[in-house]
Length: 185
Image (cartoon, rainbow, N blue to C red; front, top):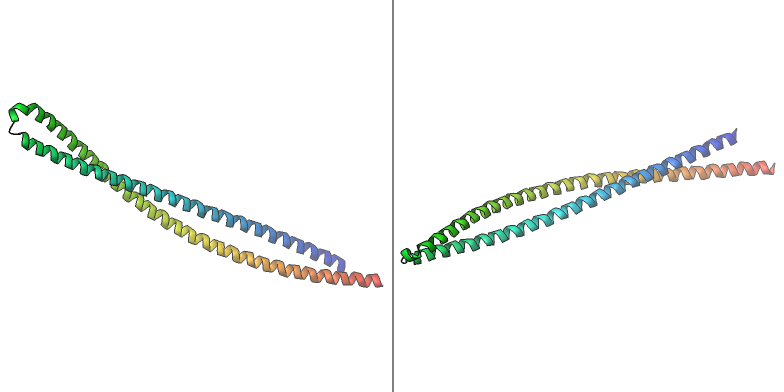
């Protein structure tokens, strides 16, 4: 009857050890997935930051181009005033310059629209960046909580395994004592 009890206890200890090992493996897998997700979100945030910097550089270039065009238009207006004395002789040239001026103003308007579009895009990217950062921060907090909880659970399970190992050692010792007594009889 005692040997049957010992066998049942051994079987129960082995089942508990297997459950603890399975639970530990599962928790470690979840921890790894959480860490990979954090790494992926950080990489995405870095890519978005580089994209925003790229857009800012482009806007600076467009603003410089707009300034250059303003200077060019001013130069054309000055030339138009200077050439008004020779209007009869240079009438055709003035028409050409006026056409060029109109084209430049259209181009300037297009660049102005494009600059506004890029500024809107930049604002949108900055908003998205803030949203991504907030989302990333929230996820990181949640994941840190999950990781902490998993570590606590893992620690608890390690404690249970240690208790089970002590119980097993005690039962094995008792079994060995019983077997030794039977051997002496």
